[in-house]
Structures are given as C-alpha cells and as structure tokens.
Image 1 (spheres, rainbow, N blue to C red):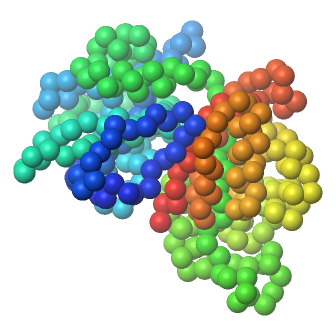
Image 2: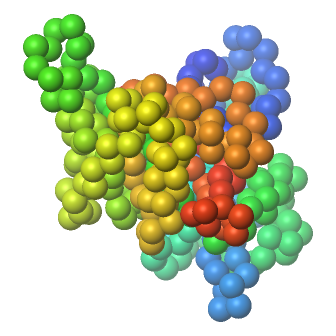
Length: 330
C-alpha cells in the first residue's frame, strides 16, 4: 500500500450524522486512509462483523489502509477489505471519520480514516502478510476484542441503524458542454471531454455500492453519465421525466414520491438527475425524516448515497435515515 499525503482541503464525504473531526493545525501533513465495518447476517438475522489481526502491530482492528494515488476513499475502503480479508463487499452508508496522530520521519502527522458499511458479497479469508487471522463476532463482542478505542466509535456509528435498510444512489450528471455553445435542443446537449472523464470514473466508483437498477432524467447528459454502469449490468435505463428541472418544479412532492417508489423496488437503484433538482429533493426527504443537513452540495458527477428505512407512516413505506455526499471522483 502506498502512503498518500494530501492537503487538508481535499474534498471529503459529508453526512447527516458525521461528527466534526478533531481539529488539525494549519500546515499539518495529513495521511489519508479508509476502511469498513464488514458485516454478514447470522441465520437468526443478527449481524456479525469481521475483525482482523495484524501481526506487524499485534492488534485487532477493522480492515483499513492508506489511499493509493488517485483513489477516492470508497475505492480504498473496498480495495483494502479485499486485500486484507479476501472478501468482496458492497459498500453502503458512510459511517464516520477517525482522526489520530501517527509517527513520520520528521515527527508526527495527522491520520484521517474514513469508514463505510460493507456487506459481504463473496470470498473466503486466507491469511496473508498483513492479516493472519479474521474473526466474526457481534458488535458487543467486537468492542471487547478491539485494541484501539477509536475503532469502537466506528461501531457506534454502525449500530445507529439496522442492517435491513435500502440504499439509493442519487447522481448529478457529469459535465456537459455550455448551453450557450450548443445550437440544438438542451435535452440533447452531450457530455464534454471533462464530463467523459467523470463518466469513466463513475463507472468504477458506482459499482462499489452494488447498483442493480438504473434510472435517469431523459436528458442525454444524464443518460450518458450512467450509461456505462447500465451496460455493465446489462440493464436498461428507466426514464424519469419528473426528475428533470423542467418537470420537477411543477410538482416537487410528486417527484419525491417517485424517487421513494423507485427505492422501494428490489435491489439498489442508481438515479441520475440535475443540479437544480437534487438539493431540493434531498432537503425534502431530510425534512420529512427530521434530519438536519447543514448544506446539500451537488457538484457535477457527485453522488448522494441515500439510506432509507421502513416506515409504515409513509405512503411508499420508506423514510430517509441517512444522507451521505461523495464529491466528484475526478
């Protein structure tokens, strides 16, 4: 694994539940890392999580590792889980960041570790140079086994929600050419060269969260953004006219209801929409659920991971439980 020291101002995941990281003095070098709470369900439905033993440190911890150059925290979390455990997983909600000091050649550096939920998909653990043992246990038992107290705070975040939740990926389309420089219908405006680069990056990022269905506002720039993911899945792109800026503002509650109904179908859904729609859509979902979001960014090619839980009082049977923002991967 390659150490990646980056500037403190680099974009980070945002979440409705994320606690403020420990303060870091200006000019401090930062080492970035990511990991996951890897879980599976027992036959009685109770979740078990995986702890790993690292012989080099002689400690029990959650799978994690440093960012390689060019990786997002989600890419790192998924890669490190596989490298350390041999398991492939599906990421879902962002949990929290842990900050602590680590020694470097000329003193100390701040280390930021971002954690996700990760449900086991397949694979078998094989001892390796980094990890010589893996144990499955409930979160209560895991807290007793963990070497570092800060890992327990990650488990606290994991325990805030049940595991039988629904994930929906809400993506803003990648960069398109300027409308002032396009003579055709706006709905036909294509992705720019920068947008194509973002599209390619999303093709590697979005599958980490296990989308099974793809929906999009019926605009070329939206459909092209998620088209490679749909192709890889062998899936059609379902048109969603209510999620265009033109139709959304005619009846926002109808669009919110439509999004929740998309989420209520089996399998994780990927939905692509526009920049004037997404912030209001997320805000309405959060307000209905009593969640406070200080800001709701929606940069081009960014992703909101929406976690929804069962709610009998909702017409769709779902209510927002968490909202996590991932900045553009390029």
